Image (cartoon, rainbow, N blue to C red):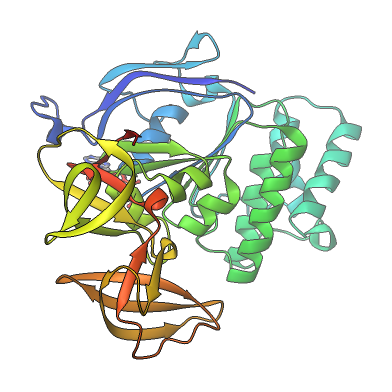
Length: 358
Ligand SMILES: Nc1ncnc2c1ncn2[C@@H]1O[C@H](COP(=O)(O)OP(=O)(O)OP(=O)(O)O)[C@@H](O)[C@H]1O
């Protein structure tokens, strides 16, 4: 396994990029630790595949270097990088059996027959294909073929990194959950450096130790699922993670107080004067309806989603969401909303501002 260093990396598909907007991948400097599981998460077109292709060697970056441990692999071909890749759609040999498909990467590297037999068995158990090992891949469903691709990707233990590009797209929902859990336990057992590209937050949050959130060609936050939930570094992370996402409300900040349309909201931390677009961000989970406390709110609609209720409301002309407990009585007396001061984040031009103890 390898530590992956992205050093001053940037990529533009244009021959003569001028401004930042010309870059599909904007300046990125980061070290991805050996043996960690990362998810690259973001909406379509944000640059996930561009970054993954640079790591795998399918694309040469227009700027910067990529190192596997201390080796500069920026210009090394994919084959030289000793990585395993699983793509969105199955890549299997139809004329081979499932067993031969799974054994292929090991055979190629000259592994012994006994090791291959044992390793193929382990992987087949993991993807639930022990009973069809001797069937030809031809005629299997797309779902089954993708499981073979995943198995083939995971069969080698000596790769530098395992890269997955939306690998569960064609897998049915139940199996998706199972395979995700399997991937996670494989990671625990073997400690591979894994990079998993997805636009699905559930997939990212359940799979990864660290989630790399991308937006508009930029990595906006790298953090644990808890970090992304509690301290979104950028308003996009707040919107994108969570269901519903974070409430972002224009505000003025003075010291340890925020003002929305002149109404005061207490903050836990103090802030120096901020310029540009200033907003507060509060997750719906940290807003509470009340009959007596907080600021006026108008409830528009209550949605019962099973585990809790989502209250859609209007707050000084802004749409906000509030998560209420399943058994909470939301009567007409609930005309106010209170925010937990410790959970109100402050953003200037979309980036989180760290306050100081008030
Ligand atoms: N070969 C290419 N030539 C020119 N522009 C490209 C090329 N590949 C991607 N782009 C552009 O670069 C940007 C980032 O695309 P990329 O495919 O990396 O995003 P993504 O997050 O992986 O999206 P998706 O999930 O849809 O694959 C997009 O604006 C895209 O149109």
